[in-house]
Image (cartoon, rainbow, N blue to C red; front, side, top):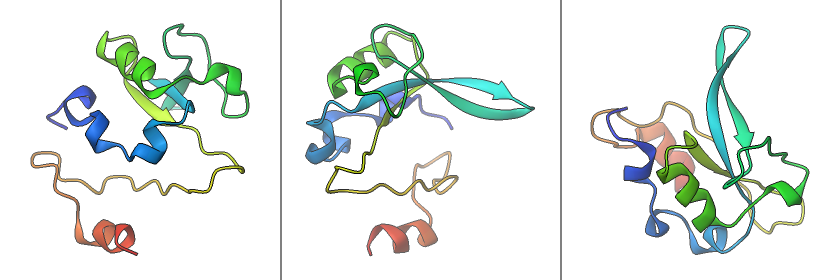
Length: 111
């Protein structure tokens, strides 16, 4: 990908319903068993975060600040059973040069 995560990640690019919830973690790239993976970390702290421990989550602004300081490779939202929303993870659906979303992903997004 030609853009850094911070160039694509803005308050406006995230739905308000997500940005307003303090359910954000950062992540760092790592390799596990020869495959790339994302290790969740606590924004502003850097210790391991957990998808089941809200004490390790943060607000969107703190997560973005930590990312912008170069301490993480990305941010992520933690969905819980109590949330009235769900997320769908679509991998490799953007053109790395233009950022355009492919047609299959667009079909899923518009449902």
